[in-house]
Structure formats: structure tokens, C-alpha cells
Length: 428
Image (tube, rainbow, N blue to C red; front, side):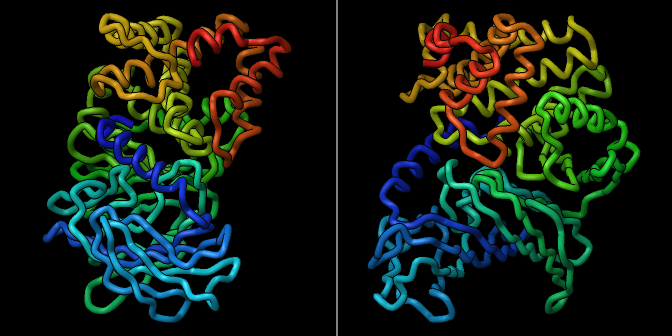
């Protein structure tokens, strides 16, 4: 996760505070989204299936700048009002069942969350700016996404495509389903007049989409994806969770993980043509399919579990692919970046929950110090115990939200000794 980091933490921290007062939990989302590339707007609907924790006279949902046009509870029209960018929906006593669904039809011009190009659009982290949702990373749900775009557009979205049909006029409905639960910030889609290529890897289908690259160029740039997937499956002990993995190549410096696919900018990927060792971006976003997506930090103060482990995994992949020198070089880069925080006298613990003076220093801690701590664990435990512990941690927590204590207990159980000294020094 590279772009948008500064505003991401601010947005999600405020969302987490908002969520603490909810009287319900979200079971699933059903979304219909229609992006308009010409006007750079979006319209659609979100159906949230909710499980009430207690009797609630109102439901409150964040709008994040979207304009609610209609609300239904079940099949019935519902009154609603908007206060401070939040949707307030009264719930009658008859509707206060243990489980209900609420559908919000909306439109908007998101200032973030959707990136529009001349003939493409893709989502960028801020899921709750293009659909109605809850940004709390601890909430993992399934989702069904119907993306409505003009004929001739290729589409990828969270999960797998289950249907495609023509709507009125020249619009095609692409129906996608993600049946494994993920945090909402990992939901997304991309659509455009992409060039396309694909290759099989065992039981998986690796799909490549590019704005300007043709099929042969896409094959060249992503030729190592299958090897990367094989490596991450081996060290995690967990097979890639989806039948299809799609990599979308767009202009710019994008590098983002989504459930079942990734979006990468040409400025990140194209250096691989000069030196094949410049594969960090491809490896980083693929590694997130395990660490960050399958296992997700339960709160943002443990975000290092997503990013620090992933930065280390890129180094580990480079070690087996390019040799020990490549591993050392990757971690030396992390040390130089971490040194920025040290030089600024801001060497805080990995679980620091306060304000950072800059995005650069935050990244120095969450990404770089996090990776160096994982390396310290490897050096302390030795390869056999370290990789066994990492595998146990991953296998035990697939589909769950995790925190630093969970990671510590998994590693200690395999190591058969306390690691409190290391964890207290680096993490707490």
C-alpha cells in the first residue's frame, strides 16, 4: 500500500471512532455500482445485511460525501435524514428483528476512492467513498458487486465473476461475488478498455490487464508472478484463496492490494524491464493477498502486521529468487528508511497509536521497522523455527483479524520460549 497513505490513516482512525457506538454488525454487502468515466461520478446502491446487537430505534451509517437518494428497510421505503454527513434511518419496533437488510441508493462525485482515466476507472482504498460501508478493518464480510459499464470494457472486481448480461442500451452488468470475508477497504473494482492476457498456474488463473501495454508486454513484465505465488503459498502453508488473481497495470505510481487482485502503476513495474530484480512492487502486492488480506490487523495501530511482514516477505522472495545479496539489499533499504525516524528522534514502538510528524516517518516505522523486526525474529529463532512459527501464525488466523499479541503467541508456541524481550523492545 503506497499511495494515499497519509489520508488513509486519518480517514480510518475517524471511522474506527465512529464505529465504536454501533448497535449492529454487518454480515454482508450487496453493491450495484455504475461509474461514469466522462463525468467522473458514480451512482448505485448498497444493501447491507445487518445483525442487530440490541434493539435500535435508529441506524446510523457514514456517507463520506455520497448523496443518499432512497432508503429501504427490507422491501419497504424508509424515512431518512442526513446529519453531519451521516445517514440516519429510523427503525420501527416491527423492524427490530435480529437481522435485517437496508438498501441505500446513492450518487456522488468522490474526491477520493475512485481514479478515472480517459477510458478506465479503478478503486483506490477509500471504499466507503464509492459505496456505503464501514471502514473498521476488524469487520470482515462477504460482498457481491455488480459493475455496470459500457460494452467493450473489461472488468475485475473482488472475488470471481459469476454472470454477465446486457442492460438497457449499451451497458453490460458484470456480476462478481466474494464469498470469503474481507475488510471493506479491500473491496474494489477496475474497468476499462484494457488489453488482456492470461496464463494458468496450477489450479489458478493469472489474469493481466493493461491500459497501454499489449499482451506480450504484460507477459514480459509479470512473468514471475507464478513463481512468487508458489513461494508465498509455501512459506505461508496456505493456498492462494481465489481461483483467479488479476494484476491491473495503469499509468502512474499506483501500488495497491485488493481482495483477489492488485493495481500497479507503470512507474512501479516498468523498471523490471531494465533489471528483473526490480520486482518489489509485484511481489509486495501479491504478498498482501496473505498478510493484510487473509490476515488483517484488527485496529490500525497494528497495521505493521500488514505492511512490515509484507516488506519482509518481499526480501525473503528476493532471497530465494535472486540470492542472499538481494535479501540483504532489500533489508538495507529498510534500514536506511527506518534511520529517518531515528534521526528525527521518533523511534516509536510498532504499535504506537499517536500522531506522526510526517508520512515518511510513519512509513519508516510501520513498513521498515516492521520488516526489520521480522528479520530480528528470524535471526533469533533460526530458519526452521522462524518459518514454522510464521506458517502457524498464518494458518491459524486465515480469515481473522489479528493483533501483535496473537502474532507473539503464535511465534512463542512454536519456539517454545518467551519472546517478550524482543516484542517489548520493538513492538510495545
